[in-house]
Length: 407
Image (cartoon, rainbow, N blue to C red; front, side, top):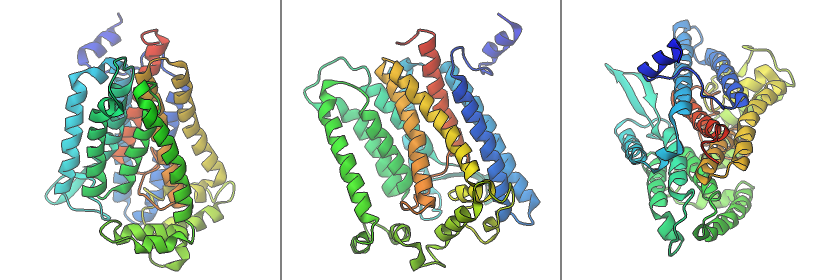
């Protein structure tokens, strides 16, 4: 054993990816991290105009989270095994996420949601943690651990699914109702539904059939509710079920020009950015809209800044990088027999697909804005860290497959 490897083992920290990991996945995640750092720096110029120290702080913070995230990716790729999914450690992780979600309720709401744990001193916030980002990953692991590779026969589907569904339902309930973060709740729900479609246990077939029917009904309902005919339905929903600001997001998606200087202002500015970007854009750093009181320029609406500066060509590069991540995960999911490994890979792919769809759909007005970030592009430590952890899980499974440790 080399001296370097010995030191790594003694320190307990890995600095190299394990043998058998997928090179394309690694290139894509590093490409997205660099792309995101550049875009956060550019988009934040509009927010911190004349405040170079503030701008530098945002960029350094994003860089720190990229380094921490990549370190987590490497160590998860080296350490994670499918045995973890059947160990007590998963139970401890489930409980830890549960209490972290509840801890958010202690802190003040921001944009109507109590989704963050704030860390700081003297009344100033140094950093925030969004536990719901990690609840998405743990929900995927719960589905894999409880439902994958199950050989025992059960009386019915509920006996098989009771524990994982109750745990995940608690996560969704806290995030959606207590935290008022419908976007993150929707992501957890969708990822869980997709993960339920992967295992081939006999008792799961009725659930899987039901989910497929619900999917097409949901598509039909979404088309109706986002059409002009759905406007009256949305307005008729009591405020106790759908809060006024949530209704406004639906109505803005239907017609942003009803309130161009209020609820529709952000969406309209985003659409103008898309229109003025052209194919090659105005050039990096040359966005005009980010200086026009454009809210959430470096988070929810960073895609608008990206397209205005780098054009449709820049958007294609972004989609290509995401496409590599999703394609490689699904490719290995097809060739792996272990259902637990399949759930991790399919869940990881859907983790990216759902975020991409909800963010791009929201900023283009195709669906209501959910506040879901554009992974590794939007400013945000929790989402960046969680994204890299998902890739780390996928790489751990892929390397185990290539080494012959799992079928």
